[in-house]
Length: 324
Ligand code: ADP
Ligand code: MG
Image 1 (cartoon, rainbow, N blue to C red):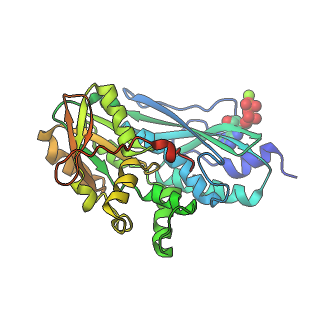
Image 2 (cartoon, rainbow, N blue to C red; image 1 turned 30 degrees about the vertical axis):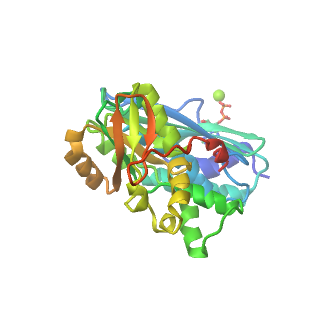
Image 3 (cartoon, helix red, strand yellow; image 1 turned 90 degrees about the horizontal axis):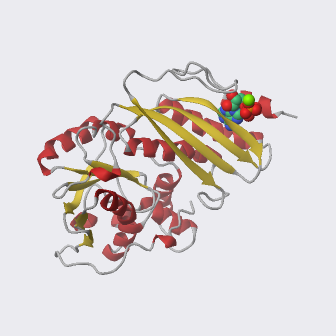
């Protein structure tokens, strides 16, 4: 029978790339880069609440780290290391093999070390703390949006929430579309390169975990501004996948404006910085779409493609509850 320490040694210990000391002692040791600010973020994934018990453990390993990297990306940080606190209901070597592979593949892709953690028996729960660094003054904050700023979103929106609705039996799509959209839900792509490229370009930034309107509202509140969102881009743009395109405009609006779990970046930038935003997008090989403007007048207005105010609310995120 494998002990707790065998388990840590087998699945969660590898030579570190940059940490001075990784897993195995009472503390890890990191050498901070000179004159950089350290960024620290934690996200916990609880079975039944943030993911379905049937999810592929490899994908769960990817997602657990990806959602943390997404928070670093939203600050414009370069990831450096992470810790893993794991509660496991039993010692399932097949699960551990797959889960740790997803985790390591993601760690290697972003060049970061797993430097420590904790392991215990309990209901399946994955807590990760990720560390990163950013030059002083360059961190992208929720509080930096100004009147007149453009508002952009990266990648595509709504696919993850659509996949969750298919899992719940609320709607259906063909099997190839389902494979594509469930990947967006189960293995989100943290926009790390875009976040870094937006240093000194974006005024404010947040990652979309709970839904575009809800997360944009965090920027508006922290920046004490308002916004007008257009929705012509919901008809057709880089932010709308071909699977989203299959839905009616009204359904699309719900998924794109209200759906969670996309882990895209929403950011604002001065209108005079449009070329810089294009460069950041090209540099990071990440599509971005202009979706609205920051206003002095507080509150969020959503306009339909004729410029008329949409009065329907998109704030009812309790429907989406981040249960994956
Ligand atoms: P302590 O009893 O001193 O808290 P532990 O026995 O919990 O230490 O852990 C032993 C070592 O293994 C420590 O370096 C700890 O950071 C690391 N560790 C424990 N669990 C994990 C995990 N799931 N992933 C990575 N490292 C872990
Ligand atoms: Mg100790």
